[in-house]
Amino acid sequence: MKSLPIVGQAFAPHPPALLADTVTADGHRRYCTYPFRLFGIASDLVKPCTWLRQARGTSVLPVEEAGGDLMEVWRSEVFDNVRRSIADGEYHHCNLEFCPEYKGAQKYFFTAEELRDRFPAIHDFVIGKDANFRGGPEIVNLSHDTECNLSCPSCNRLELPKLNHTQLRGFAETLPQLGGELEYIFIAGMGDPFASQHYFQWLRTVDLARFPKLKEIILNTNGILWNAETWRAIPEATRQKIGTAVVSIDGASRRTYEENRYPAHWEALLANLPFIASLRERGEIKRLRAYFVYQWNNYHELPAMVALCRAHQFDAVFFARIAKWTGISQWMHDSQDVAHPQHSAHQDFLRVAAATAQLSDDQLEVVVMR
Ligand code: SF4
Image (cartoon, rainbow, N blue to C red; front, side, top):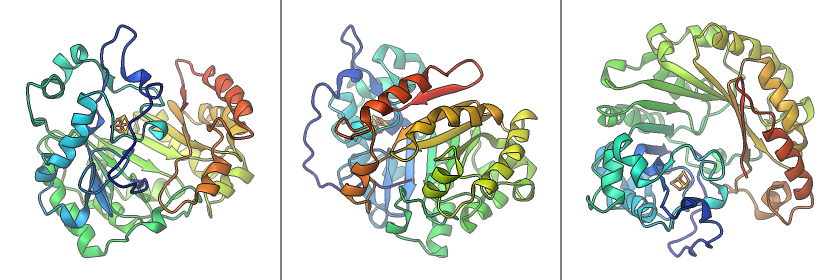
């Protein structure tokens, strides 16, 4: 999980235009369900969503203050604080401008009416029936180990604390505290599951019986170390739980890929993609998704990325706006952020993005974050 800047407690209210999509055309509030379903564990913070405006003790909790009981954190005032700001329609703790869920397909935004049957605990909280959220976490986003084989310019993993083996093992041990209700484990929001010794060891040794409701492990990887050998090292029962895989690929040519995914080689990616595609073809992976961070040097490659995905059995590709993570200078971010209306390439980006979004069809879902 990447960490957005700690911006202090005094956030400005969102302008009405930015909040427009939180209400239906006929005036009903739409509630984002992420902080009601997701538990994020990073090496510095625990949080109910990845994309918050982070203020320690208000929207996120420092790991060292979180204590040992993850369910206590889940039921904390800090987590409920974020949920309340959604229930009251202000989304005060959300970084809406850069949120890929809000600025993407908005698949998990619902009205109270829609929530009633599908998510009754969320419904009861947002209508004010329950003062505290009584539902449990559905999905945990594991980001507590920052170890990765890549050091991408747009990623801030080297700015974050690197936990030692004892601390990492501690997280792995406490994870089953959430196990009773957990349906999805996302590994990894930070670091790579094949490059991190900790994550890879977890995948090879996890006792699935401790997660009785687990439907799926979602594998999030840069794909460079995902090959037949590393795949077979994971026990078959665990492999069968890996239903969805997300492969991050921030370039559709050698030049941009190698600039954005340092020090990976384009050939190494191209060598592994047929293997990954074969897993999807045989049904070992049920859904294969690509994640592409668009920026100044690669936005023109969006259509080429769609073609690359089609050639390798992907089901979906998401084009994400580059985020301003902690440790990335404002100047560096602004020079890359073609989604910003003041960027010199913005109009051209809009043209490419609109044309790319048209390429979506029954075989490949294409979403370009606005
Ligand atoms: S709107 Fe975005 S930032 Fe806010 S809770 Fe939902 S996913 Fe997180």
